[in-house]
Image (cartoon, rainbow, N blue to C red; front, side, top):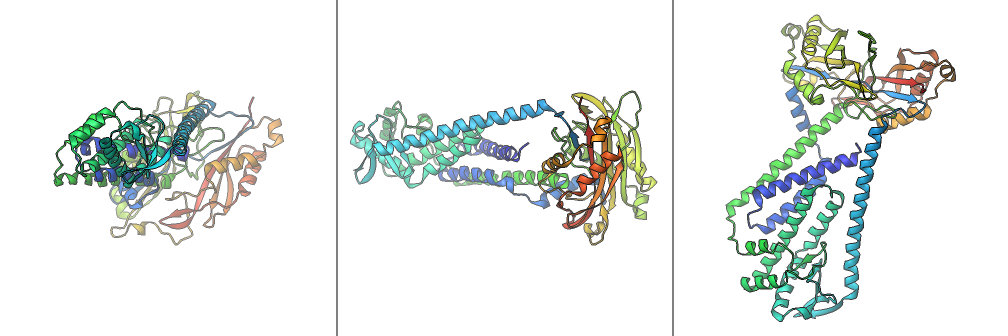
Length: 554
């Protein structure tokens, strides 16, 4: 999903929660000025909080998934790049994504056009109106029979349609709007609605904001000593008069019943101000959720992407071992598929399952045994797990514990290739690491020249996976000899991303054909410097594995 749409969803979730808090808790009081501040703060916070992330909060949440003093790091899937001669991707998925984006753009442009037309209408009224003064107040005399309104510091009124008493009250009302800059609130929520037109709660929030501004203007009139009953009669007389538009503060705004009820309402006791403190836990909850999401992105971040297909895993894999291709029955075992198999509930649920079930063997802890146990298995078409193999052993006790927990897993969501469920070999490294009681950082040496396989912040091609896919498609040339002989398949290359981002020790760990191997190595060696991986805030060397699939199309 495009980052803009992710940001938009985050903003609208926050706005919806703030609106619900207002309706449930705050709507029935009379703190009009504080209510206005609440609305403006909610909008400002909603627009900004997606950029705020507190790593400590994300780490705090992640610590719930780690058992005791042992640390289990789980790595899922592997990055893949598919080089093909024709488009063989998931065209339907891409098409629907484009259709939804196009519909959103069309409707947004329509609302922008509507907004522009309204602004031009105000400008036209301003140009057609004659400037005058009524009881010392500058006004713009309307020629059309519409209700009085204000826009920023301009007051528009058809003075001939109102009595002297009505004019006095209307001017007091509109002066309050102008003096308190209520048009700023209206313009702000209108701009939010331009991009959040699909969220009904935002439109309801807009209505409540406009009503609160009218409450404040009505209060401004009554504070000048105007009789409330007489003022309400004047409002009733103007109820059916045509209004200008939504961008302005209309004197005879609808929902008149609510305005009259607010005028007659008993002032709320000061003690009820405590309710507004609820904005702080809600804001904290949103920042906390955003920190957890960003922690997941940084810990295993960008979507794995195949050329021509949407990304299918949440965490890019770095796997030093060559996956098996054992065939148990008549079905082929895939390693790279369009839709990767998934633990029920996703990666977060799997982390929770492992955190609750993995027990660091006491004997291994006493001996100080730690390391990375890599297990691979086949996710069958019905989601069962089979054919478990320890491909990287550390200690029999740790190996047995990793196998025990993985074999106890529930059925997975099976992988799919071209819309059909297939058998997929999946590799899962589990890192057992003892933590020092007084300083967790002692468990991870950082000053060494060690080559890591699992790190907190993975190395990344400049510009991300999408840029890497483009680089590969632009530079890889399918060898003519391989095309002529119909040779195709998956070449797996791994290499070390150095601390300065350069690539070294490029090796073919799964050969397909000398010509294909040579081409894959050539292009990878020609890559620009990567963004290096980091561990505990320090740059480290990381071994990275990149399968490149060469496939001929019929």
